[in-house]
Length: 293
Image 1 (tube, rainbow, N blue to C red):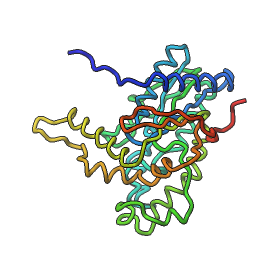
Image 2: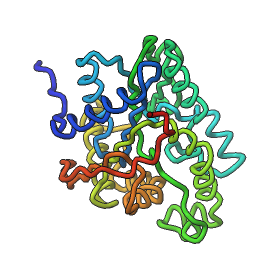
Image 3: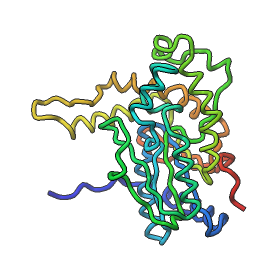
């Protein structure tokens, strides 16, 4: 059986990311691990792009590792405890507040010290973190960490807009706003500290939120085709309406990211409905910690 071909990544976009990585590597010097963030909504292609960039940078002799924000999810037991103490919606992984931010900071700190690091990995099928034996070890001296996630660089919003529900999920399951207030608060606290460790941020900007929903539905349909059981069922795979409800957890922050006039990103990549980059714009680049000289 012939092997499946990897997804094609726009060569101009890949070249732009490589140039950005080289620029930060040159500016930080050999004693730091550069963190290049790729932010993009669900289905935008950020994971595919991160892998292509890692392959290209490794081929150029740059010791590179990849980490997803998803790999930092709290364990299932931790999220269930959080849902009992704060709000039931926090049992569902995804939004700020459901990640172990301190774990992410420890990983970046260890890479920055030039140490060998065991990267956390999350198993979505188990809805839990993988045991250490199933994680990835990256060698000492790693120079580039490609960090991708759906809400990298997101900022908290003002109280007056936070008070208004944006969808049925918020109206029905978060009528008093406790869930979204908690999410908003951690964005301005622990997550801001994590974003500050990003030396360069690339934002993949979708055309609109409805396109994001469609992209996520396409992903789930592909999973259904790949995982159909002998009896024809597709356990654990969402239908289109299930996807729409799931994406509702992400809607508020996704809409805010899409609406920002001046995203705190170094490179803003505007995508069309087919995920093709149609424009690349240099941004304000104010997310990082300022380690570059």
